Length: 113
Length: 115
Image (tube, rainbow over the protein chains, first blue to last red):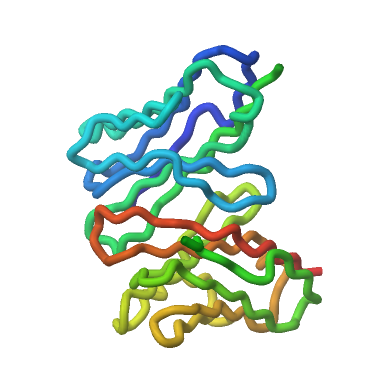
């Protein structure tokens, strides 16, 4: 059974700091991994999608890496800003499934001005 | 273009009542998923529709839950005889095709509160 774990559950940093969010998954048989952002009371915004054949994806100040063999992904946020405050969710799409995503419980990030 | 839309955005209902939640996927997207986000539980898969194929209902928590997708587009999730544990945010996502590499696009969700 695929399980996705995100550490830490919550993180508070001062503005300007670089930070790393961690995601681990138990079954390496995945099609891809996706990082999302969720603001309070809102839906999910897709940040980065990494296919299983890829090692990393970058978008602006965000960089996501994938090490499928070890079951790990990281989301790196450079020069954090208060507007980055949100919950970040990691999800994997498991091979052999109907394509539904399996989510971690998220990391709640707070960036203090 | 328009994204995935869901209605209502918020729904408060009394225990025992039936509710219907609606999802409008992105036009042309053939696959649609429903997920539930409960407090402290994370996001859980509920049901999956792909084209005209029979839906995958493996994630539905009980027979009080059902969903349909009319004309391969709009989907309705129905919860009968609601219970307090049904309180959650219900999210819908659509995918352009059925390929495993395709990205899922999520709607804003419906927050259901059962009193």
